[in-house]
Amino acid sequence: MNRLIRPLFVAMLVLAGCSGPVERYLLPEITGVDTYRTGVRTVEVSTLDLPAYAEDTEISLQGEDGVLRPTKSGFWADEPDRALTELLAAGLDQALSSNVAAEPWPFDTPPDVQVTVKVGKLSGVPGQDLRFTGQYFLTSPAHGHLEKAYRFAYSVPMDDSVSSVATAQSNAMKQLVNDIAKRIATGR
Image (tube, rainbow, N blue to C red):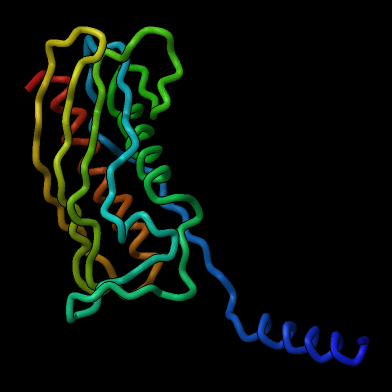
């Protein structure tokens, strides 16, 4: 029995050694957003609705042929929908004079404004641009008088590295933060 286990153990070690190191990427924090004073006290950010390919923790890059391919060694450090939602909430918290939190809503009173984002596209070819498109909705669960929908489309340059995808996503999210914050502050 021992003669069978030892070769199997050696084979497992060899296979484990063949798989390369796994690199995990964090989204850089958003800084330098436009700031607004607003009468809105509280803002809730719903979990972002991402396309299926963008929900995967393995980072995929788009080829010149338009096909998304996994990088095999590059993975997001967190679930993409959670990470992007938290990034949006943190950016809006910097931009607005309101209390901002991602769902689940931590307060007893409903939020003055709820932000819901449906992402249509979040991909790009390395060395070109990341495309970030979709629609966001502003509603008011506490008061019921706000129901607005807006489309967005941003292009952010990327270089050829996997880490540039994370930087580009953060920069695209900064543009979305500025857009949403301005709408909330001005009421338009």
